[in-house]
Length: 75
Image (cartoon, rainbow, N blue to C red; front, side, top):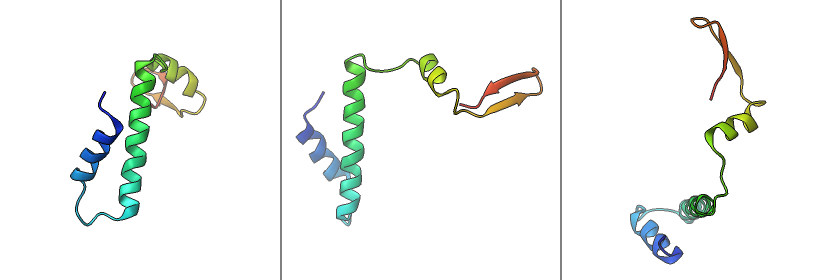
């Protein structure tokens, strides 16, 4: 994994020259979240697709599949 400073320099260089401070802050926020997620995955702190579906199932809207006459979850 590259260093935070390297990633930030690369990010700044990729932004348009007319970017506002708010634009830069937003992109830094997203970069921080991505790096945090990558770290979590590297350390085994993540859910499988099935685990995520199970955890989120109560919020997913059921959808009736007329062809197969089954209720499925919209993912």
